[in-house]
Image 1 (cartoon, helix red, strand yellow):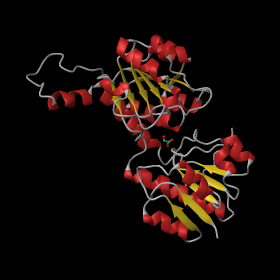
Image 2 (cartoon, rainbow, N blue to C red; image 1 turned 60 degrees about the vertical axis):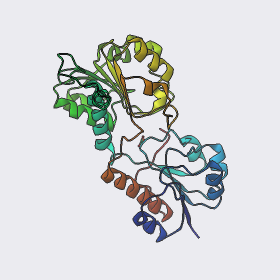
Image 3 (tube, rainbow, N blue to C red; image 1 turned 120 degrees about the vertical axis):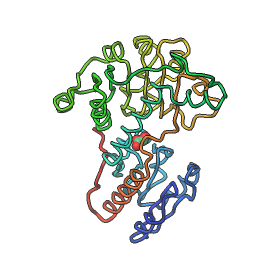
Length: 321
Ligand code: GLV
C-alpha cells in the first residue's frame, strides 16, 4: 500500500484527497512538530512525505526512507532539505512558490510600516498608561513615502515588495546574485552593490533565501555600513543575519530599528534579547499566513504528491541549480 506521511495536522479535506490513492499517516498536532524519532520511524515505509520547515532532511532522514519518492515542503524556501543529496537518492523535492508571493510581500510591508511608525511600541504606550497628552515628537517615526529602499533578494517576493513601494513613491534599489533586467525595466529598480545598498538605504529589506552566499551576510560590518536612521527588515531567513551583531547594532544605535519575521533558531523564547528592545518588532514567522494562501500552499503540496505518486512530473519541483 502506498503511504503518505504528513508531519503536521492539516484540514480533513486535504487528507481525504490523499486517502483516495494512499494510506495517510498524519501527526495530529498543528503547533507542535512531530518528534524526530517518530518522523524517522514513520519514514521507513513512506512513499511520500509532506513536511514543514521544522523537519530537517539530511543523510539520516534519507537513510531512514528507502521507499521515498517525493518530499513536498510546505514553504517556498527549502534550506531545511539537502537538495543535492535528495537528487542523488532519486527523491523529488517540491516547494510552494508563487501562491505565497503577494501574501508574504504584504507581511513584509506591514512589518516595514509597523517598525517605521513604531506601532507596537505605541500601542504598548497606551496599555502601560503612559498616554497623558499629544506631544510634537511623541512616538515620531520614519516616513516610507519618498524614502530610499534597498531590497536584498530580487526574486518573486522582492519584486512584489518593489511593486508595492511604487505606490509610496519610494526610490528602490536592489542587490541580487544576478541582475534582474525585467524588474529594472518594469519597476524602475536600480541595481547596486551590497555596500551601496547598505550605505544609502532608509530601509534595507531582506527577502533572500538562505544559501552559502547569503548566510551571515548581515553581520557587524554590514550594520556598521548602514545609516544610523536606517531600518532593517527580514522576511527571508534568520541565518542571513548574525543575530548578536544585529542586537548590538540596535542597542548601540548603528541602525534605528528592525522588523523581523525570521530568526536563526525558531521559535525564539520570550526572554530572547530582541524582545527587550523597543526598536525591534518581532513576529513568529507568519509571512505567508493568510487563510487563503495557506489553503493554496497545502493544496499545491497535495497536488505535487498526487502527481509524483501517480507517475506524472511534479508541478513545482526544486532542483539543485
Ligand atoms: C516560509 O518561510 C517559506 O519559505 O515559505
